[in-house]
Length: 228
Length: 228
Image (cartoon, rainbow over the protein chains, first blue to last red):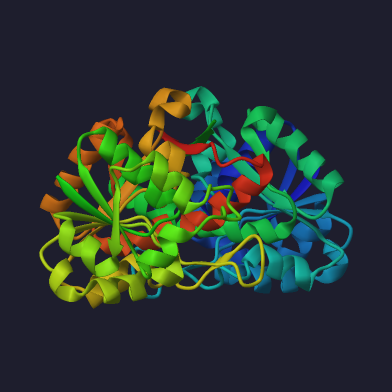
């Protein structure tokens, strides 16, 4: 499958590399292709420079947000929270309509340091904002509750036995996303469909707890497992 | 130990019955003692009437918020979110100062139906509001992330192996609360101290996810276990 990923950071790279390893064709979308490709320094999260990453992952192509959205039959939003709506606007509604968007983003506000707060929460969510802005896009919120190494390799903790909440308005879209997640190593019994996209209020709010557990553990390599 | 519990609903009753079974003396605090004692109908959450419960739990005494706060050497806030600050005001600062308050409350707003939103969240929390209002009270946020049967009997799910986040400013207070939780069946390795009371923003925000999982499962008998 051709998959377009909006974003070039750690999450976008982890998903892209996994998809390529599974035989998919992947294009990353960015605001300024030349600037991204020439970036020679790593980021504050410990990711290597894009140039270095790209040399090791040469099968992943890079284009504008519009290029990546046009390329993908399925799309992934791996931009920052504040970058999501601008990236989708740059992608262009015509390149989005009728497609599935796996929305991983979290509306984190680091302007006052760590731990961040959320720019939208409680009675609304970024997932809903995206869905409202693009009613013909099938937004499936997923993967926003855990660290990127675990998204693409769930067996890294507890033999892969932990819980991934997802939500979205379109049942068929969720089914297709779950099929893709299965190929990442996620078992159906660990994928929890909460219902429509308003449930992104729950999964995004979880970040307010996640980020504090991250602070307590000093590692992002943990996950929530729902036990009954 | 003498323990005063603010509230007479399902959470207050579960904690009270458990404490009595462990040999503690318990007084429940309520706004109007006579009204509470004479209540002969159950509530919408499936709890029996207070009169019926009280007959079966006659060791638990009932007084005003002020009586219960004066009685307890340790206190528990098991009122609703909207009732918490009024209950503490009625309890009286002199009856609170220097004591530990285990704060179980969640600032849930059901005015627009299910699922509820939070009346305070993201950049503040009810736990912090209580701590700010009563700086000489040692607030320990705990138990607000799970259903009351599990609070007092963690072994009801996954053999008791699941995670209880707590937070609060005072290390000694948290140590005393953890000791009490141990007698409820909580193992130290499952109690996660997140740090100071600002972390209540995380544990209270979790309710936005919890309530949706409750909706999906149609039972509150589940818990979060953090796996690493």
